[in-house]
Image (cartoon, rainbow, N blue to C red; front, side, top):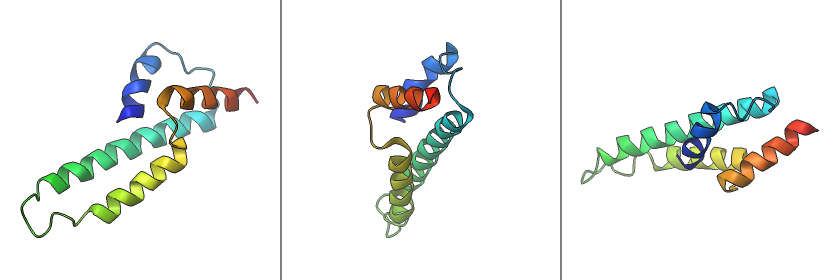
Length: 89
């Protein structure tokens, strides 16, 4: 949730109003992916000490790859700088 936690105060202060619709959708996708990953990890943890513990690993990994596609694995500050740059084009 590193991106969501970083973006939350910025969004509350209205700091992303100049982003294009495409970049705003990207932010929403990043938040949704982080939430979904966290949900699957929580479901996995409920299966600890069972034969089913690794059941969700492929789904979690696929979602992590999608998150990397959206963020480029950049740190949150750098990601916002990139998105701001892309919004000014």
